[in-house]
Amino acid sequence: LAKTTQPISMDSYEGQEVNITCSHNNIATNDYITWYQQFPSQGPRFIIQGYKTKVTNEVASLFIPADRKSSTLSLPRVSLSDTAVYYCLVGDIQAGTALIFGKGTTLSVSS
Amino acid sequence: DTAVSQTPKYLVTQMGNDKSIKCEQNLGHDTMYWYKQDSKKFLKIMFSYNNKELIINETVPNRFSPKSPDKAHLNLHINSLELGDSAVYFCASSHTPGLRTYEQYFGPGTRLTVT
Image 1: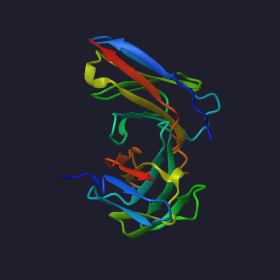
Image 2: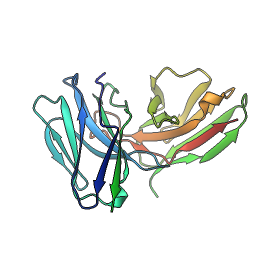
Image 3: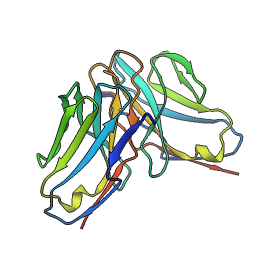
Image 4: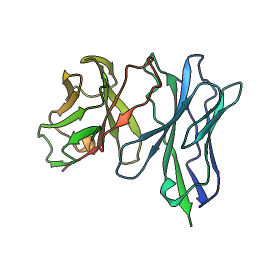
C-alpha cells in the first residue's frame, strides 16, 4: 500500500491560496489520489480525486506531476471556514485499498 | 434529506456491556463502511460491505460484528466493551468502487465512551 506523508499543520490567512502537498513515493500504477476534508465533530467530506496531471472542481484543484510521487491540493482564496483537517489518500479504487487515511494536515486560517 | 445517518450520536456505557450502532444511507449506494477514529484523530477502516456482502474486514477484534440487513443499512454490534473501544465511529457509503469517481459519504459519527 502506498504510504502518504503530509505536513502535520499549516497556517494561512483569509484570502490566500493554500497548497498542501502529499508525498507518496511508492504509488502503484492503479492507485488514485483522493483528498478529504474533516471539520471538528463531523465526518470527512470528499474534496477531489485524480490520477494524473490536473483536476479542478468548484472547491479545489489537484496537481499531480508526471511521476505521480506527490500531489498538491490547492485551495484558492481560503476563508475562516476552510479551517479543517485535510487527508490525502492513495490507493487502488477497485481493489479497495483507497481507504487508508493518514494523519492529515490541520489547516488553520486566520483573519 | 439525502444523507448517511447514524444512531445514536453519543453512547456512554460501562465496560463489559454490549452495544449497537446503527447506520442508514438513502443515497442509493451499494457499498457501506465502518471507520474508527481514535483520540489522536487517526481514522481507520474497520469493515466494508458491498451489496450486503462483507468485502473488507481489517484486523478488528471479533467482539465487533457488522451486520447488513440490506444495502441501505449497516449496523455495528460490539460485545464486551473495553476502555480502548472509546472512539468516534463513522459510517460511510459509496457506489461500488471502480464504477465511477470513488467518493465516500460519511455520517456524522457516533462518539462512544466506555467507562
